[in-house]
Length: 186
Image (cartoon, rainbow, N blue to C red):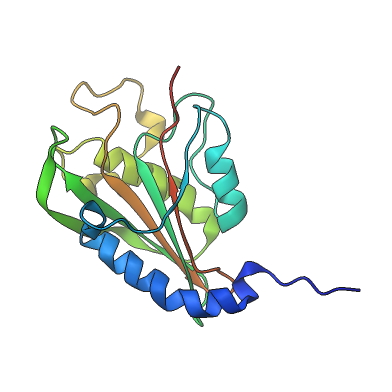
């Protein structure tokens, strides 16, 4: 019987992890605007299953719904480490409230460290809500309760070019960077 290894166990993965960390650092400071960085991007029609495919690869539940769910770019930074599984969410601000490029990219932590994949979906949804409301303090969305939300906020953006970053580390996590784009609406 032939033993099939996973991508995480390959020689490529061992060499690539250092390069992927450098690429992640470059993205954090906005270098992808001036340098073309290698990226795996998931794009397609609305409700085509992009987020489901990312879930299958990353092992992390992501926000999903029947209608338009992904309203901003979602970047998954998967990093192999000796530490137990953990996820930190960041908000990367590349554009102002009018979607004009900012002179300097900033990336800020959103919420506390998450120690279970089951806690990621809700926090990613809250992080997206924070980016869609650039006039408000993003910290107010860390404890946001969606059950009391019955109308769309007139000041809320429909979509944003800013990015929710999920930095996931663990000993069974492959070294990959994946990007989920909002679906194409026809």
